[in-house]
Every structure is written in structure tokens, then in C-alpha cells.
Length: 272
Image 1 (cartoon, rainbow, N blue to C red):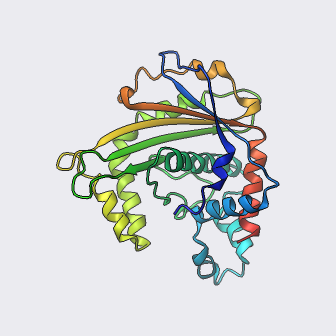
Image 2: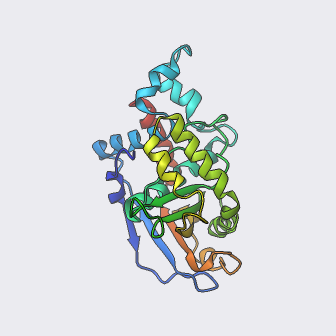
């Protein structure tokens, strides 16, 4: 993991002067995927699909259901396209995975991809911190290691822009309380997958008293172009965040992102 990074050439940083009301700089990026690039789309769809179900596990997991691979993914694993909370969960999962890619490919972290495969109810978001990434340096000393926790919110539909960056900032204030549970959940899922070396990596971050490390937080918001509003971004504030000095902010915008989300899920199922 991860399975590809080629789709990240479609994410372009935009020079800007956006700041929150308390002066915190905002990183702004635009995502413009080329849906006609079938090679990269196939690789991206595989990368996306494997967050929910490893390709080498699909046949075993669908055994007994009577479903094809496509039907198993569409009917059991993936959030629904149009029912209930399904579309919003799709948007949320897509946003989290794209930001996980940013954390890994741009910020150079190791990001365990364990959050989506064990969902009990597919049209619900997974509880706990949205994203945790790790930077590990000296194998015997943790003092320079970095743990990054990120909260992610998305809006790809609706007529009125919602304060999704502020929502992500507010949720980020709770991450320190959820850290121990979230780390344990990641560790348990890696253990269940037999990823014992990766389990050891997580263990480095579970006892900061005996094994101190550096910590930072992030808040990210993703918007469809029609929902993106500079004013809503600049009205956000980080002043009450307990880790304000180590907090960074990311906003991604793009055209027709909900259509892209559905298209990606369809390719991921069709090509399984």
C-alpha cells in the first residue's frame, strides 16, 4: 500500500492569499482528473477499490453470496450511489482517501489504509480520527518521529456553501482525545491482516511519555466548484484549537466532483 500515485498529477496547488479570520494560511489545490486517461483511471480505481477490499480477497469474501466481483463490491462493500446517506458517505470516503494520498505522496508520511475495509454498515462513516499518518526516522529513537492527525470534510452538492473547513477544524480539536483509540484500531486491523512489521511501527506512537515524538494536526475541506466560496474559508477560525501552533489547513476544489466520485466507484467495481 498504496497501490498507485499517478492520479496525483491531477492535483495542482494554486497560489493564493487565503487566510482564516485569525491569520492562519490555507493551502489551496485544484483537482482536475482526466477521465479519458484510461490507464491512470484504471490504476486509480484499483487504488481506491483496495481501500475497501484487497483484490486478492474478493473471491474468498464473495464466496457464498452468489455475487460477481462487481456485484459484491456494489451491493456489499461500497457505499450506495443514491440511497439514504450513501452519496454523502461516498463523498466523505473519497475526500478522506484523496487527503490520505496528499499526506502520503506530498507530505511524505506512511498512511495505513485500514479505515474502510471493516465497515459493518457501508452507508455510515467510520468512527474515530479521519486520518493518521506517520513519519519514522531513526529505527531506535523516536524523538524525531512525527504523528499527523487530519480531519476531513467534503461538500460536493447543495445550493448553499457549508462551513466545511470550520467543521474540520472543530472536529480536529477532539483528535487528541481519540488518538489512543484510533491508534489501537489501526494496530488491530494491521494485526488482523498479518502486517506485523507495520504493527511495530504504530507501537512507536502509543506511549509518548516513554517514547516521545512530534505531533501535528490538519484540517481539510473539499468542495465542488459551485460550492466553493472564498468568504466561507476566510471566515473560519483556528483560535480555539488546542494545537493551533502545529495546525495546517488544506482546501481542495474541483469541477463536478460528485460525478467523478460515482464514476470512480463504477470503474472500481467494473474492473475488479
